[in-house]
Length: 151
Image (cartoon, rainbow, N blue to C red; front, side, top):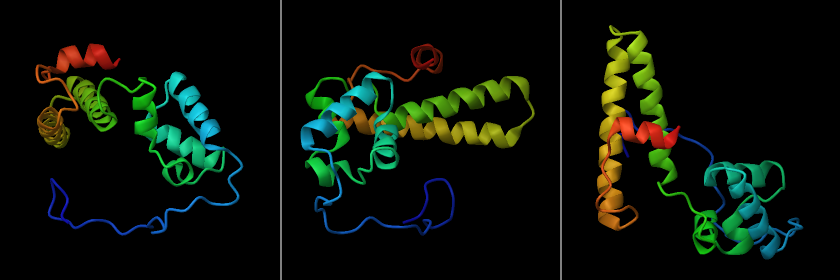
């Protein structure tokens, strides 16, 4: 599959194993894993950061294989999920930093093009999340209001 804003194909990388079985060396039960996820979320960690911490610090390679639930589903059941999806938040942060860069460097046309591409990705994602019901239908992307909300 080709990348969105270039004429390149995807990048090769390592793949997860096909079998989704609980590994015998994991010493945490399902309840303990859920409590760890809730604790890390209350500390302000994003779901992807929680997964990385569980893998690197606690030795849990896959939360879904260990507890039969994904991190997002656990957060949703406990009603502590973020208001905006994580990928949208990261794109908005990228756009905010590009705007700050453009204020200092008006003639940087490469950065201007990158900012335009990021904004189009944001608009496309917002449209998708509204259509699938993951966001409110009335939510609008305004760079100034969103900047205050994120920071």
